[in-house]
Length: 346
Image 1 (spheres, rainbow, N blue to C red):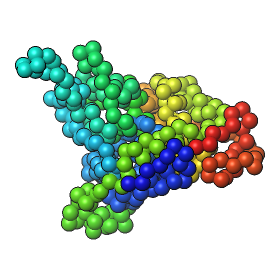
Image 2 (cartoon, rainbow, N blue to C red):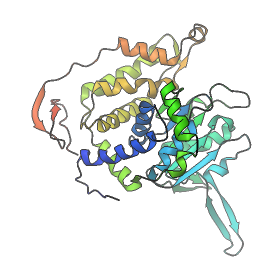
Image 3 (cartoon, rainbow, N blue to C red):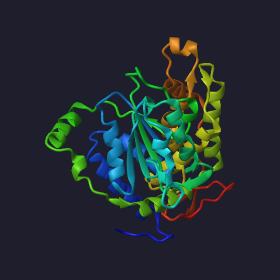
Image 4 (cartoon, helix red, strand yellow):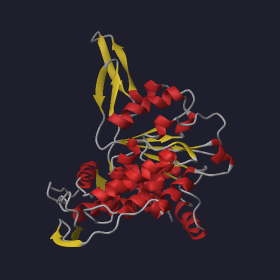
């Protein structure tokens, strides 16, 4: 596997993402935008919530992403009888050592797949809160660090709600983005019959990237430049959700941070060292909509949180494009001239 030093260019590093993208798209046909969003969340150090009807490939998308990276993977099937200790781990008395020994739970992996997360009780769901936000687990007063990179990919079915426990606001706010796979087109479904008709392509899926390479990519994304007007644009979008008459709960400051991180990752995937308002616009619905709570009147009028975010995008002024300067970044391209904060070279 190819390794990169700390001075590796963004172009070299994004070649790793291209391999992962091709690997996942070999399993999930006809959904390039969904695959791109999944990779964006991975590089932005976030967690992904996949919400859709049964049978459209939610779990397969999560497995394909996990298997394309050579890292530790654990799958948790959430059920009503699942206990918090099944996720975080438990301390067991060792007779020979006459001391407690910690047995790590399923959360101690680099990619954790939570299948049907809304079928577990709220007490069990809350076991993920600390690990998703602080990337650590505290058991019996002792803190254990989780491996890096760390990503939770959870699925849930929004239609069949019998016997489920809807995720509370605090839990949904931990997920950087929510994506719906959706039904495939007729052509993609025909191709799926050819590819999946015999054996599952997951069986032959081999890792195309190493966890160390993903860490290099994450570090490169952290260095992507976000100018002050773009940051202010993200703040304006999130702030508009807190005063919108159709919403009784707007997005949190964590949502602003997630939107900014996702925009930086999107810029890196596009081969840019700097984020644009276009990156923020493209990700606003996926990052913000699942955190919002419509009012009763909006629900009666069949207004969804996605529609509200789209309306906010239409109403919020977009920062004007600045003049280009001749300075070159690591990609050898012109960088927007924002004198408030010069761009960093990756």
